Amino acid sequence: MIFAAGLGTRLKPWTDQHPKALVPINRKPLLQRNIEYLQYFGIREIIINIHHFAEQIIDFLNLNHNFGCEISISLESAEALETGGGLVKAAWFFSDQQPFLAMNADILTNLHLGQMIDAHMRDRPLASLAVSDRETSRYFLFDQHKRLCGWQNVKTGENKISFLSAIQVAKAFSGIHIIDPSIFAKNSRTGKFSLVDLYLDLAQSNIIMGYDHTGDLLIDVGKPHSLEEAERYFH
Image (cartoon, rainbow, N blue to C red; front, top):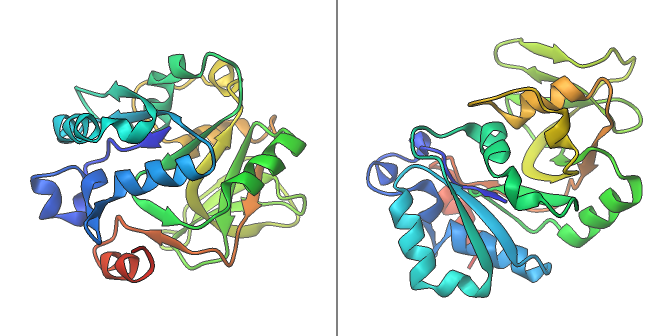
């Protein structure tokens, strides 16, 4: 699943007229780059949630024949449901009961998805979260076994603890998840909510693991100053 429903307020004025997912990086839109990224690792069945200028994304996919993939659309017409609400709305797509990958449309990375998938299939946590050592304002916290135990916002001082651990290792989330579909039966949240909050709900009684890919290239293109950086690395 590619999360592409966000308003992209940090990328104004572009997003006053366009969806964030169609921001061009060296003339190639973010959405296309991430579809091709998934294709490279053999992922060709994709669902994309859309809201902001949704028709532009539909037209773009139709014009390019879905880039040779089987693409489904989850339209969030009334409001963008964030990652958690968006995933729940698209749950029908994951009816084969196989683990699936979800990612944000506004990140670019050279993370090797094959290796991350292999680690998830070996350990079989409820979810594997791509994380790395980098500076940000919000961090996931992990215990000594790389199990999610909390979250913190270093700017506001807010902390959310799933369970107490003597060791709390802070890692920045990269916006890529591999998720077991049993998460849908465990979820009690409805409407608009973040997957981060759902993970923190479930981490006390379920194993949610960090997958550390420190050293890989990762650019959050949701920030205006990062567009130039993205164009330096992604041609």
